[in-house]
Length: 106
Image (tube, rainbow, N blue to C red; front, side):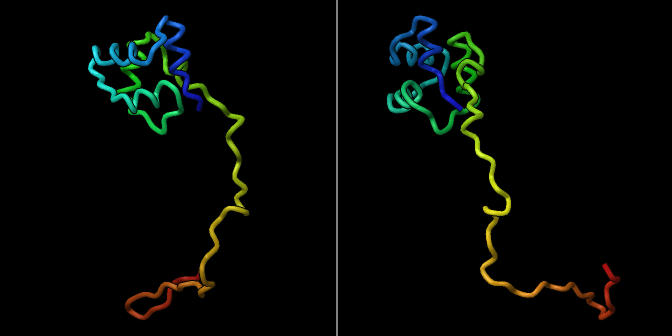
């Protein structure tokens, strides 16, 4: 996903992170300078849904304007290649009944 906060803000005439930070604070979202820098200029590792909701309300936009899908960056995992290999090849465990009787065939 591409984080598009800066462009969404610019489309609404907000050119400085500090201006958006003030607007968010007016709506109850207090963002530290470090976190605001990450939201403004980069790709945040995570964002709370409540925070995203406030950002969308302040900017008057939808989530689809802030988060742009990038399906070309998704890679299909080869199931055979990436399965973990057992550390030791131990024999299969056969379940047994506690009363000594054998289990029905499978």
